[in-house]
Length: 580
Ligand code: TNX
Image (tube, rainbow, N blue to C red; front, side, top):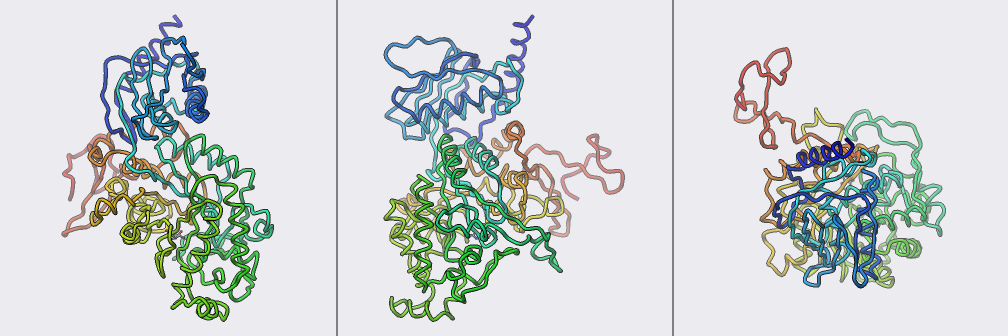
C-alpha cells in the first residue's frame, strides 16, 4: 500500500512537471525519454580536493533535506567509486567556462559537467527547477520522491555581471531577510548582490573606528509617511534605528559565497552622506549641526572635499569595509552630489587652486581618484554611479549607468567597464501596473514586459566596446518599501525577467515562452514564501485615439468587463471584444 502511494505521488509530480518551467531559460534544452527520481540516500559525487564544489552540492542537499526530507550524501571521487542508481555526478570539464555547465539527466543518474564550482551550482539550480515547485518549500511533505523529466541541457551565462541591488539605508531589513533575498538571487542565477549600505537617512554598517556611526548615523528621528509629493507632508513620529554588526556582515558574506554570489558593498560619497555628517559634523563644509534625513531626496550637505579629515575618515572606514568583503569591487556611490557647499567653501576653493582644478566637477573627480588609490592599495576596484564620469573618470573605474545608457556608452568608448541599470528598465522601485491598483511607489512605470525586452548592449557600440558592458542590474531603492514583503513584491517577477536578459542567449529570449513558464515559477516563489506581484496579469486601462483600451502583456489572457453592475465573473454575460 505504501509503495503504491509513493508511486502515485511520483506519477502525480511527473504530470505536474510535464510542463517545463526554467527561468532563466537555458541555452540548449532537449527533452528525453523517462524520468529522473531523486532517491533518498543517493550520493552527490564531487571532484576531490575541491572545497567550493562541496558548497554547490551542500546547497542542493540542504534544499532537498528541507523540502522532502531527502538525505543526500556528498562524497569525493577518489579512485574507483561504487555508484548507485539515482546518484549525481559533478565533474570538472576543462572545455567549459567557469559558470557554464552540461546537465545530462537520465533515469539512472544525473551527470553534471561544469567549468568550475559555480557552473555546478547553476546546474543544480536548474535541476531544482525541473522538480515541482514544492522542491523549494522548506516544510514540504516528508517521504516525497521528486521526479524530473530526463533531458540534456547545455548552458552558459551571456553576461558576467548579473546583479540585483538593495537599498538598506532608507529601510533596513534584518540579516535573515538579506539571506532570503540572496536565496532568491541564487534561484535566478544572479551572481552579484549590490548592497547599498549608507544613505542620508541611515548608516547601516558597523565601523568600529567610528562608534558615532552606530549611535547617531544609524538613527533617524522619524520617517516620511505617504508620498513625498503629498501636501501637507506627514511624518510617523517614530525613531528608526538599525545597522548590521560586523559579525552579521561576515555571516551574510559567507552565506552569499555559498550561493556563488559576490557582494558589492556601497559606501556613498561625496553625496548622500548626511547621516555620517550628523555623527561627525567636522566632515561637512559648514560644520553642521546636521541630522540624518527624515525626508527622501537629494541634500546639499555632502563630505567637504577641501577637508583632509574627510579622506582620513573614509580611508579608515574603507579599510574595515575592504576587510569584511572579499570580493574585488567596492561601490563608492558618486551620484547626486550637489556642488552648492563646495562653491561657497574656502577650503574646497583652496583645494581647487592648489590642485589646478577648473571647476567643482573636477573637484569631485579629484575626490574619487583619491578614493580609488585608497582602494587600489587594498587590492580593490572602484565602481560608481555614472556621475563619476563628470570632471574626468578615475583611471580604472567601472561605471554603473543609471541616468539612461549614455554613461555606460561613454565609459565603454573610453575603454572602461560598465554595468547597465538605466532607470527606464532596471528600476524596480517604479510602478509595474497602474498606480490605482498598486501599493504606493516612487513613480515611473516599468512593467514586466519592458524589463524582459531590455537589451543591455547599446546598438551604437562596436564589438570591442560592447565587450566592456559587463552586464546589468536591477535596482531596488526602498524609500517606499518599509517591509521585506514589499521589497520582494517590487522585485519579483521583474527580477525573473532580468535574470533571463542576463543569462540566456539573446536569440533564445522569447516573451511568450517566458510568460508561459512564469506561472509555475511563481508557485516556486510562493514555495519560497516570497511575495510577488501579479500586476502583469492585470489589464491596464488606456485612453487612446478616442477609445478606452484594456491591455495586458501576458499572452492567452481573456479580458472580461461589464459596463454596469454586477462586476464581471468567470462566466461571461456577453462576449466582449478586447477594446471598447
Ligand atoms: C536616484 S539611482 C538615486 C537614489 C534614489 C532613486 C529613486 C541613484 C544612483 N540615486 O538615491 O533612491 O533615484 O529612484
